[in-house]
Image (cartoon, rainbow, N blue to C red; front, side, top):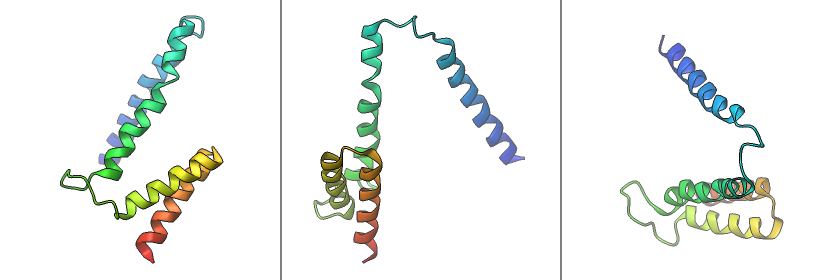
Length: 102
């Protein structure tokens, strides 16, 4: 019963969000609004990632030699050089796994 409720609430949430996106026609938004909305993913992504990398479970800042910080710096370097989001994510994950398991 619980999984059915989880599935149904997920479907309801998805369709509510999709309906708002599908109802907006491309001509309804001005060019300035489209330009401003194009910056939203770039602003939200660091807000989600930085606390997970730089804060520990107690909410204080982690040390500079923490494996998360090292993997984060490697991912930034790979992202800057390759300009490829998939390569950046994979480099961060693989470097983190190598650091913590070996």
